[in-house]
Length: 411
Image (tube, rainbow, N blue to C red; front, side, top):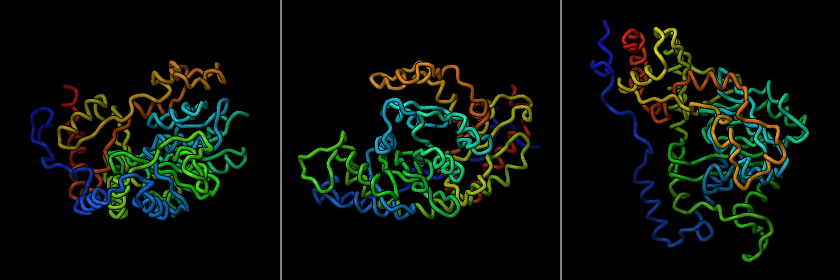
């Protein structure tokens, strides 16, 4: 008989930790010292950020990269470059980090939420056109958890309605769609290098594009509105100083050398977990999209059915799994529309949405798939998927143990 659950005092399935994050070594240390000793710490003086922009853009199959202070700024500048202004609406999914929608508010646009697909947690293309109005200017599909959204259908909708597609690829470093890396399949793509991300310098972001005019606009906007051919004290656009530091550029170059192998490991481990956990009643892994050729697994997500676990609530399941040595969480507890910022339309000085759409009530939103996902999802972070096959087997053993002892979850 399986041992008692660790949450009830039994032995853990796993005592040792999973791989720590971030992973670093002498490469990062030497790169940082080189920048310190150079005295060229800012992007305008050095060459580390420029070198990283070129290297990351090439890695992601894009022509241009503009490195910025964080992923939120990347989204906001991309929206400005797309021409979004007061009165314009932008389609976004509700199951995502705040920045996907708050960046729209910060350019005085109006976020319009569209529900997600139950099997992928990505925006549902079948529901986009019903949300379009004459005011719609752009779509921001999120490659949630590291899985590419259905870009073929989304870009087709955008072409029909003359809309800009800005990929939110904060989770999707190295992810591929039909064999092509995401980020410049749409008009622009935005990545984050925040501490938890699959490629990190603690903070930072980048905008990718294949379009010369978007590259020119974003580069100006991130550099105080200057133009490449202009002089230093000559400002043409309402930009700011959103430049990345040379320290971050140096760290990211070192981290980039690790990314390909790490992404292959995460994808292989994600596939393995999908196969093994499919055997556990009440646990359903997310499906891979039809054209997803590589998943970067910033998150590994399963849906939990309490009925298969004798009615035990998800919180109890997560606590039991964590006690067995498998760190996990329930992810987002509510959709963005239920956040006080949107429910109360607390947009501060960015009143464009209030003025343009006084009828739009986020607090009366109806997104059943998002609601269900908030209630059922269980998340494992990307660093767990950098483990060995034996580490993945520990995850599977722990889930099976909790299932087999499910009656104990109710106590």
